[in-house]
Amino acid sequence: MIVLMNSAMMPAEGTYTLRRISRALFAHLVAKAHQRGELVSYIGYPETAQHIERISGAPIPISREQTRLDGPTTLLVCKLAYRVADPGSKGKLQPTDGDFEYFVADYVPLQ
Image 1 (cartoon, rainbow, N blue to C red):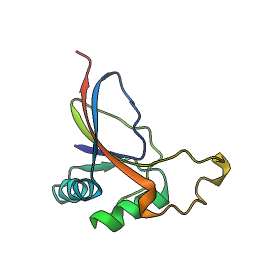
Image 2: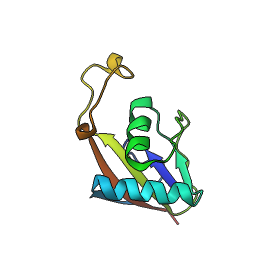
Image 3: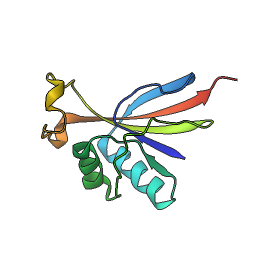
């Protein structure tokens, strides 16, 4: 399972290793995970989902569910490079491709 997220949060106890990656590598990893049927989206914002679809070619469903991690997991993170100043404007924001940054994280649960 490859988990797709729109923030670099830690949803479960364990150890995380986070590293920044290029847009091209992120898009490649998303596309490959989708092709293998391993991609699980926890992307909660339509603008972020549309951006990931545009760069990867993979359909990205929107999910407001709580992120669940079951065992060692790879996380792919596409997030805004800044915090939205007015939380009321979430969902109305029109970010450009240059507003996003990309990460991959490895998660290992506590033993």
